[in-house]
Length: 367
Image (cartoon, rainbow, N blue to C red; front, side, top):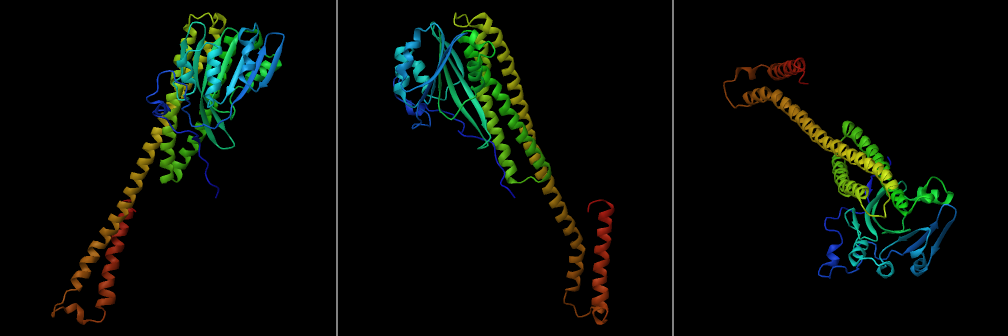
């Protein structure tokens, strides 16, 4: 029998995050507080407009500084934020607030939108399902939205959900290369939100299998998996619920960096976020009902066992009475002087009484 695979988060729920590593340090101190301290950094750059496109991997962040004042749209993506020197160089060159740099290297931030006049800082949570390892990976994505430039920071280099956006840029498909940098930011957020549906579909399939198992052969492992799903759905809700505020804030933003033409698309992302939150709540309700079904099935099985023991005890009560009577040491016991008393009298009486009680129990459907 093959070992059952489990869907799980690669990182457990952080109640405090990495803030313990920063305890006592001044605000704005750029100290990496994640759990991938040795993760290398990979920098990719895409620069484009409606007619031109350029993509390259760069070795040093200084190579991207020339695009700060570019008239075309530039997307700088940094995978891996454990090297804080790169983050500090970007902050110095692009005039980022120290608190923004601090949030970038502490990858346990709540999704949010902050307006710094000449740029916007957006934090979102990205979840993706790895079919090879049968795991759900979650990480923080930070975005710096400036005029004609979008800088994104991802905690690891294990992949992301932006391949469709990259393909549209490379093939000049859709309107991405014809729109501004705000539309690019929308495209990335939309890809993240749409991938939530894929993750929830995976959880839905896992929960359906767990429900079938619960109705056929529940055991201790079943209850453990129910608690795992309950904890992981709580984590999803904790990280996805603020996305509604982020998309709503971007719609209402009066910043000149977000154009009215893009706000229409952000409204669609907001609707998708609401659908995802409703789906999470539905899955949580299903998992809660599974736990109740499991506990009820345990009570039913225990009651059935207790019923069987009670019936056995009830059958043996008169038998024990007869055995105790015939076990008394009296001199004048006339039944003991006949040879047939033991094989026919005693055992016959025992069998008649036991058989009669079993028949009565079966007629009452207790057996």
